[in-house]
Amino acid sequence: MRALQVRPGRGGGADLVSVDEPSPDEGSVLVEALALGVCGTDREIVRDEYGALPPGDEALVLGHESLGRVLAAPAGCELAAGDLVAGVVRHPDPVPCSSCGAGEPDMCKNGRYTERGIKGRHGFGRERYRLEPAFAIKVPPALGHLGVLIEPASVLAKAWEHIERIGRRAHWAPRRALVTGAGPVGLLAALMARQRGLDVHVVDLARDGPKPQLVRDLGATYHVVDVAKACTTADVIVECTGAPALVLEAMRCNAGGGIVCLAGLSGSKTLDVDVGALNQRLVLHNDVIFGTVNANRRHYRDAAEALLAADRAWLERLITRRVPLARWADALEAHEHDVKVVIDFAA
Ligand code: BGC
Image 1: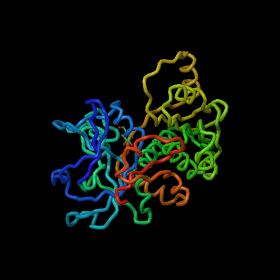
Image 2: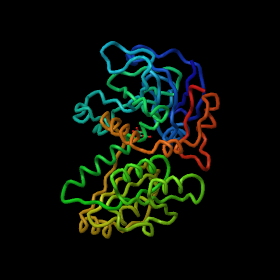
Image 3: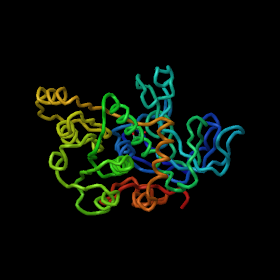
Image 4: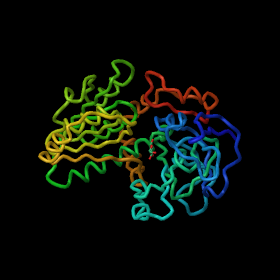
């Protein structure tokens, strides 16, 4: 069968190769791939900027945003042949740390977790793969092919869960949210902010293409200006770009008692910052800045609910390109007006 392979730590690049059928050791649920979402992390792995090989292997099967159909599942498991399924990305570390032991590998403390298609564990970019039932999420049939959005949505479902838990440290009545970046992560963050009834503002660089209208159709306001001009009264800022200048602006520009959620990964960059002034602001405002990554099972469930509650036509528009597996290289290349690119295994 065909698989999309990369070589993190060995110079990067990607290839479509022929591999063996998945070993039963990988899990008792056999899945046929339908679709695979492509994100910035995949492109970083291809450029050899991120990712890790499974121990003892010379290549990694890429892909962590999955949608598949169950071909076979053991009796007594929640899944049956024909069900739509998404794979959980992160697996607990072997120790396990207290978070992994508590079923929250997304909060792993020692960094020895593995992630499918990213770090030390083969991913979902192949025609068939296997899942352990504890790492398989049954996709509501009503979501259909949009189930491929469950993994990226799970990351934002976690972000919003944590924002709300932090908010409950004291009286909290948030009114306004600012999201930086109108890629898939930012748009899903904005969707979930609107679902919470917030006045939502989204900042991005794009002046044309689908992003401005996608934001407006959520009932949110789109800005092509810097964060300080877009909104200085946001109770919540969800930073989805990882761009160091925006990260800094987000920390400086929230309302008193604001919560700044950093959900984008930055490359290395030095900025001249008055740490004293920043500290004074954070302390005097009771601000919280926190980072968030990945998601656990409960967030996949919340993500499915958020997607089911969203306007289906709007979600369809998030997927701006569907590329057959045979043209995988085109999918891995970022095009100007892409929002979410999906590799179609069923084509
Ligand atoms: C994935 C997460 C993962 C993170 C860091 C993201 O692209 O969606 O599941 O934890 O990369 O590896």
